[in-house]
Length: 82
Image (cartoon, rainbow, N blue to C red; front, side, top):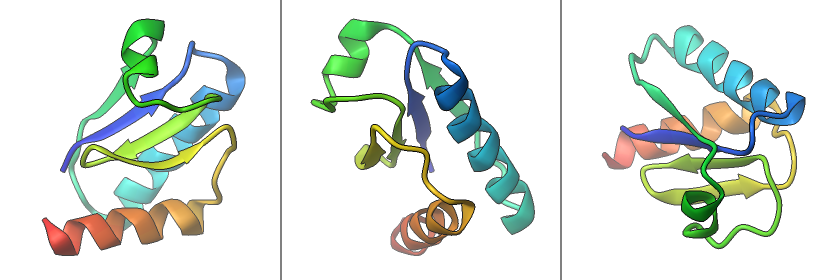
């Protein structure tokens, strides 16, 4: 599984990163989360606002901080299909 948090490193981006780490720990899934801060790389995902959360190459959210329950659903969904 591949997870990326897109954003310049602002507090909102850091919160998405932290919540994602917490969910992975709760699910006992070992995955490296990549922080993408390069604006050109962020633009490749065609999101209009950061933070963005990408799971297995799919944009799961952009421009908001998702609830941990939502992040958990996305990770479980991708973990089953992967």
